[in-house]
Image (cartoon, rainbow, N blue to C red):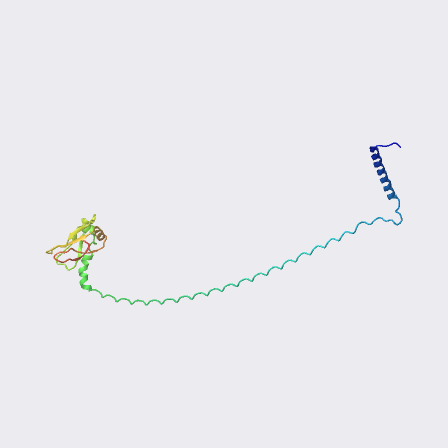
Length: 200
């Protein structure tokens, strides 16, 4: 036999291995198994799966707190007692009637005249306390545009007194309000004087 090279040897080896494997496979598939021989059993049985753990029990819910009791309402205050009504005043005594005979004749003439009017007739002293001849006359012209003024009340007396009036007092006179004042000092004394509008 001639010597073969290395490459040819490897090819033949490969070819031989492949043919032997095919023949062996055919024999194992068609020939019955030899007596006493048995195929090996597959490996051990799979282990049983573990049982699932039981779920935990839910906790019990807490009990609700009891509601507080309502407070008692306060008692109403007692109403105050009504005050006692005051006693009625006693009625005044009636005044005594005037002397009808003498006054009727004297007053009738004076009352029927024109009403007092400072703007038309001026003013006069209706009363001069402790009078001894004094008289006061204020001309109507002084009421047209009243200003402060001084007036003599000498009249028929032997001495004089001065009565001072403001513009406001003259306007009050013209509106019908009597003016009470006190004269200046004269002969060591003064006089309280009441002034009103003249009727004529």
